[in-house]
Length: 155
Image (tube, rainbow, N blue to C red; front, side, top):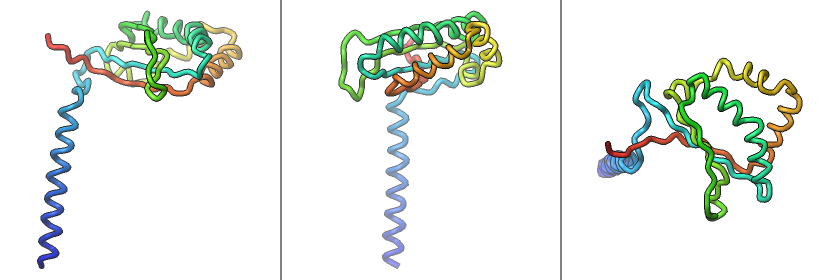
């Protein structure tokens, strides 16, 4: 009986710890972007192999930026920005380019654009070259991650 009581108390303590831990994690992070119909911001980070940063940027500007601008012209994207850090960081935290896209809303941001394939064919009639260059752009990446962000600036 005493062993069962001890297990029960340990289980309750574990549940209380887990509940407090998850609550503290939620309190530390920014709230999620859940307001329907509101703009939705995603930061896309790119980390290139050393010595290939300019090659990546050239390919990005040639083969991806025009597509993003075309999508922006339809209203699905509200704003676009490309940035690079002014100083270096540690290798594990290094990123070379950040592309910030503000989408019309979360649905647009997380759904497939039905016009994208047509836009690609329109913008790059030489599909073989386009595919090779896009493949190369991704070959020189060491890492790529997408980070939805929430503006919590007080009004």
